[in-house]
Amino acid sequence: MELSFLTAVPSFGAIDCTTGRGQPLLRASEAVLSYSVLIVDDSALIRHSLRSCLEQDPDWRVCGEAEDGKIAVEKVKELHPDVVILDLQMPEMDGLAAARQITAVAPGTAMVMLTMHSDVQLLKAARAAGIKDVVSKSEGIADHLFSSLRNACNHSSEERAS
Image (cartoon, rainbow, N blue to C red):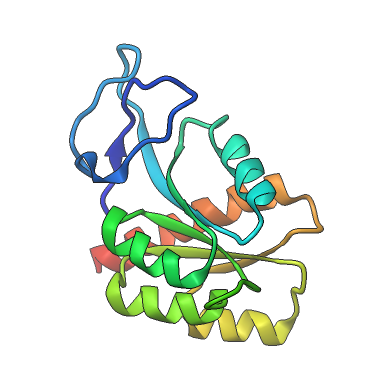
């Protein structure tokens, strides 16, 4: 997985992942390594909340959003994010089907699933689809999400190195 340097941009604007992954970009006179994130959820409120949460931490930069799995696969091809946050239940294509397609077209992309329904069966299905972790929307989402994102990115970096 390639790391990108975060650029100096107004906090109100989205960062386009196509501006050169791994290219040195300056941020207020300091270089900060960050991971690009694609947020995928059919709820605009959830996408907005996740974006707001992630934008508070310089380790993460949101490069795009998608409202269903089909659009997510296209955005992964277009934006090449380091990590994708996927909702399980979405119209057009659910998170598991999207994860399988993302794994096929971008095998180095880390994925974390968000869901209201977390159980052992789902975790097994998610891992088989290439998802590194499943995070419950109902449990301390912020802390668990950041931890899961870091683990997923670190795991993907180790896989690419070997």
